[in-house]
Image 1 (cartoon, rainbow, N blue to C red):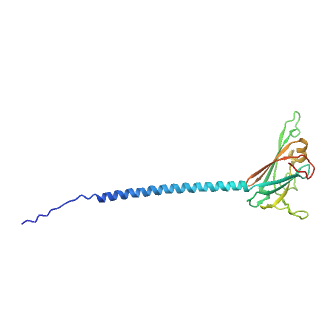
Image 2 (cartoon, rainbow, N blue to C red):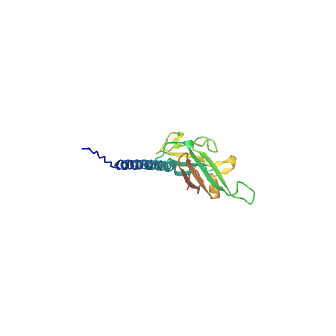
Image 3 (cartoon, rainbow, N blue to C red):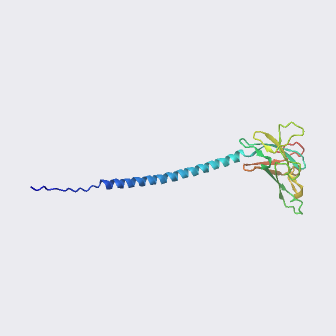
Length: 216
């Protein structure tokens, strides 16, 4: 009697299906990782832009000078500016507070007829010795009761100060002083800028050029 050995061969495709599923799974992980990296990078960039915009806005809104009032100091050339730093501002050095004043010169600085109106421009900062005429400068706290008052070179947040602003530059024939504005019945534009911060604008109109008069 012969023993017959039968061989049965079966085709098994389960392993191939498993490898395909693994490839698809790895591909999905790679796609998800790339997508996650792009999303994280985009979110980080948006966050940085938002923070930068917020910081810039804060600097512009808080890092600026608030003008409280302006008076005639010397009718010939100077004003007294009462001011304080805006809420939230950091302490600011006097030489980081810049000012510009512009006014119309109806006779064009003495030009021959017909007169052509020009614009006088004078600039400086709140530190000593930088105004067109030496002797004007540093800021003085309003609560300083000493005689003479003590000038400071740093403005602190929450403190009110006064500053004598010389609006005449005789050497360059520029005059926006109280007498000039009053006599010519014109206005001056005053800009105060804080380095790295914001700017403040005010219009000066002199209805009375006597010392101590309020400038509207």
